[in-house]
Image (cartoon, rainbow, N blue to C red; front, side):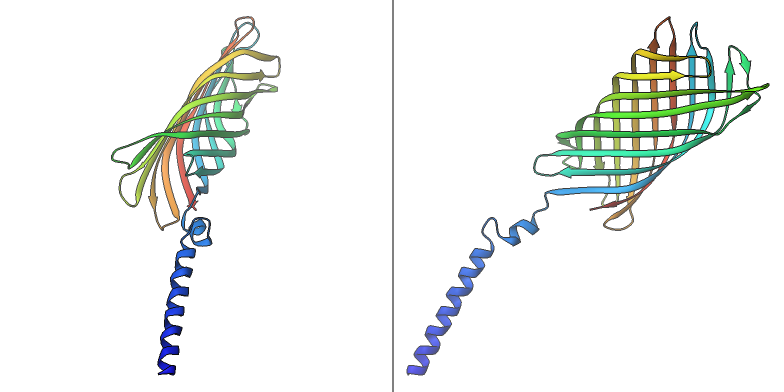
Length: 265
C-alpha cells in the first residue's frame, strides 16, 4: 500500500511539473515565441541589364547628341522588410559599359564610338499602405535617392570628344507586388523625380542644372525554383530632363531588359 501511494504521488508530481513546463514554454518572451515569429524578411541577388540609351544636349554652349548607346550592366540588389511595422528598405548598385552607339556635335557625325562607363546606385525606403486582390497583392509607397553616372564618347577626325553626366536625384513613388500562383510572382516600381542636381561636361563646357525632373519604372516577373531561390525577367525605363543657364537643356533616357536571380530569406 505504501509503495502504491508513493507511485501515485510521484505520478501526480511529474504530471504537474510537465503541465507547468508546457505553460511556461508558451508564455510571451520565451525562446519558442521568439523563434516561431519572423519579424524580418528579405532578399539578395544579382541582375543583368541590357539597355539602350540616348542623350540630347541643346543650347548656345553645347550641342551634342548620342543615340543607341548599348549598355551592359551587372547589379547587386537587396531588400529588407520589417513585418510588424510594414516598412521596408531596398536598393541596387550597378556598374557596366556602353560598348556601341553614335554621336554628333552640331550636326557633325563622329567616325567611331568609344567604350564608356555606366554606374548607379538607388536606395529606397517606404511602407505598405494596403493589400488587394484578396490579400494576394500589396501596394507600397516609398521615397528614395539615386546617383547616376553615364558617359558618351566618340572619335572625330583628329580628336576624341566625351560627354559626361552626373545626377543626384530624389525619387518619390509607388511599388506593388503580388503572387499569381504559389510559384509565380510579380512586382512593379514607378517613381517620379521631382528634383535632381545634374552636372554635364564635355571637352568644351562644364555646366550645372538649375532643375531636373523625370520618371523611372521597373517591372519584374519571377518564378520560384525552390522555397528560397527565384529567377526573373523584366524591364526598366529611365527618363530625365535637365534645364541649365543660357537656355541649355538635356534630355536623357535609358531602357532595356532585366534578368534576375535572387535568394529569399
